[in-house]
Image (cartoon, helix red, strand yellow):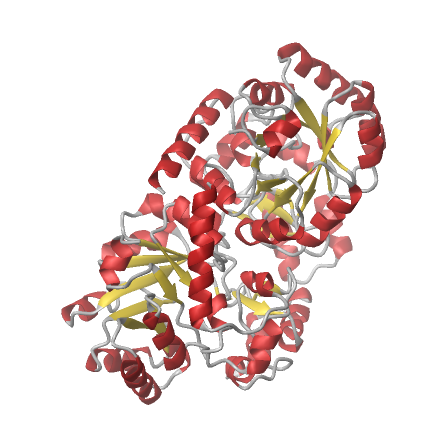
Length: 312
Length: 312
């Protein structure tokens, strides 16, 4: 299982847990790293103080490498990055912004940098910026998404051709078979969101997990193309957005419907009707199951991967 | 390379060329079957008389098995099916309708039946209807598409779990690596559209081929969700639809913009500004190339597949 991704991060398996808002706290992060993957804290839903506390709790729970995901469009992104540097976190995954902004600064402090992209154009920008690895995330991923709507099956070959950087595939990967599939396309690692968001160790509410573990195919859709394309779970919040879009609502009207803090309401507080629910398309593959432990998820991924490889 | 798909159709490679309107005439069909795959005529753009003529021309060009794709929502679908039976075509792929409608009738006449679906729900209906194989086609495919918007990476595992039928993956498959990837997900064959639509043998116009061989990522999008979701290529027709949708146009308004015969105008006549252009997301992987022969496409697919398999 050794390749450029495991060597870069000093991990056993090239499996990264996406740093998801309201899901990726210290418990999930430490559990994934303990299993030999790379856990990422989701700083997008944290204040700098909370992030510092969470980093220290990860360190108390595991001595293995871990990282933090920082969505660069967050107003407090600069402060979050400062905390990461002060706490000497070994790895940062940046997203939703320019890979040029922080990469050199983080490198000077000995921190490894990966950046999330949704197109080969941005993958090349990552190479120019000197990032250590690129995450290529397809249309099937939950939450914020690329404008091109390129699926993982089409995106990975495009990014593989565009850059020689170590390449991590994301979006729609929820089984060992899918890990093998993206490897066939040229990926060297996987970033998995949905599966880990719905584990016992995820800090999301039980109500959110239960809702997401009962989704049929088609129960998540990409909406908000006029603002920032986002994959949402069907429900009251979704319906309000969809109806507004169907009648041709302006970006301003949509912003008013979105309001503020709705991901906390939906994912963390568990008001699945009024809150904003973000999960990937792959959730429907888990329909009818109960939250698993991170250990169980790793065991399943590894056994499925081995079986699928043997079957080829 | 022997599996249930090659045995079912009596072919050498489990590679099916999608039966595409205005692209899949006798030249493309015969060329794919000659290479050891299964060529399909695209009856969706043919009158019964034209279909009969095309079937006879395929037979004059190859003695190998081939088939016809019939979109069941076409007003003349019944007549097309009659011609297929009279001409004793060995294989029919049905789509855009119920697999129950024709399967028994075709089986009684010794004709193999595959049906195209975009969800595991419809895959189970195929099993109930007794079809011989199911084609699971993901969001990245060109032209008409499923309402669930499930990508190939997410759809194949779902359909694999829902049915024990021989399973053909479609949508976003334009390389030997992608063939291997969907095999890892449980598919036993591939249906490839985009790659073959843009070959020398495709009956599409040169202008259409050149437009589609110059697409960037994001240059096709799924539109027309209020009618029947369809992946279109950016251009004048696309822009008119997109603008109407953005202002909240009704289905009736959209139908008026679509008009009739626009796929012929775009694909066959080559008016790429005013016509309706349909191609899959994978087209951007071919950006900057020239139309290849079907022989070249097969050689590339096979060598890429073998290299990718050896690399795993």
